[in-house]
Length: 181
Image 1 (cartoon, rainbow, N blue to C red):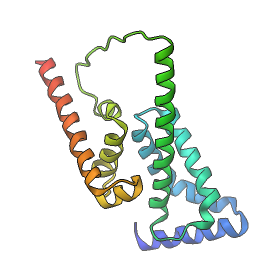
Image 2 (cartoon, rainbow, N blue to C red):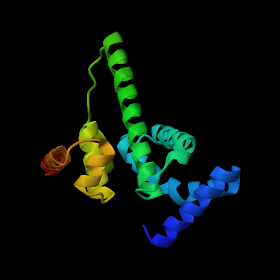
Image 3 (cartoon, helix red, strand yellow):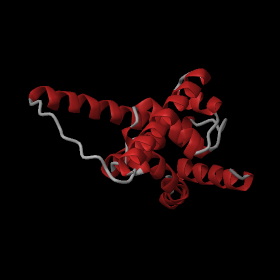
């Protein structure tokens, strides 16, 4: 992020914290919400309602802890960390609910093979850890060191999960191509 944009964030945060200035908060929201929403959408597997919930929870938590933010990173990076934690919690909750529903009434699902691979759906089907690392690295451009810090995993784990995510996506693409021939 450019230095002048960071300085603008600093000014807006100070205004918001010192006076509760709603306009300052709105400006911060407008500056960061679209990018955060796009990330949330990918992290929760393309479910818009879940992405909106994650984004809302991110801003709620950010507002509660903004006074402790130390500017060791950009505001966007800090918000991304909060968003990732919210997305993880949402994924765990959805998985728990899914397991409960399956145990109550197990009915095998017949999956139709799509004629054309939808990359977003393929990414959404990745296991949570793979999806998070793939999205942060290949789509958002974070380094393995940054991902390790954001997800609280080692650099080696980040690299490994990226390798397996790419392999799974490649395999799905190959299966799809073979099905279309």
